[in-house]
Image (tube, rainbow, N blue to C red):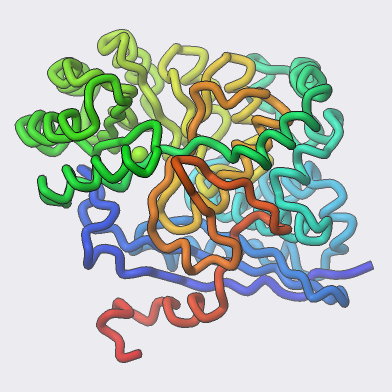
Length: 434
Ligand SMILES: [Mg+2]
């Protein structure tokens, strides 16, 4: 038996705003940041669970305070008992009646709960000696169902239906695991498309993306229609006719404006329009989906929980689901989201980038391929080539595909030196003497 002895938290901020990496129509100067936690135990193996909430700078200290508020729930707990019933671990944190007032099941507190659950999953995977995707894909359909909170979604998918979905995928698990290890998982890149980049840089990065083997690129839009027409023209010429180009408005528009704007760009043959409006506007998404068809509407990186995903699917407001590893209630709630997508037959193309999001979310797509949807068709994970060097087991993309991770854990552990160097001390590291 072992016990959790500490929950250490850190406010980690990278000075990405200095290079305009990650700039879009709503977020012109992000500093990619992690509200980071480490769950340590008194076990002789010395293994610890690492995870984080991704933020873009200011407010990361608020997120750290939310992580700190979970400490009392975790320190002193029996590790084997907690890791052995992760459905109960979800209930312990997500159903806390006082903390729940801060959501319910959304926002700063819910994201912190997600990170705490992800840290426990990291620890469980390390103890099992397996990458998280493989740990999850080896669980019985019954255990997988036990991890999901069906409250508020059983009108869309019931536990019995979920069990059927997992059981239906069970026979092909071994074959798909072998295929995944051999081929990896498709990636697409957002690197060319940041709004702050010059036309020359956009053109060069578009060509490089095709040469590097990516099956799709994505451009940020929504600040100026004239600029969007010019930039999409440059991108389309660089990648050629028929090559998929998605666009991302990062919630910039109202509903009517979104429809008008996307129609004005539709001649560029768009793979999808991402986050056209507020992530909470379900009926607005449905109106936009009708208004811009056949361009597909994609969303999810700011969808706060399984309940909003459910409604987006029920209303026909989302044709591509973009789960995020650090937005909702951790692995448990993302299992609910993957189940909803499988039930409604919608492809999942996760949001990634930021810091550590590629490392974390690849495990969920790979699990989905092996043990749930059973397909990679029309699926791909976003990839942005930033900040991977800070992780102990960085995500690797080659020839447009994520290489399947084989190291134990959830991929969410940062190097100690990076944690130390980028711990926020009130100024950017670039402005602080090393
Ligand atoms: Mg986006």
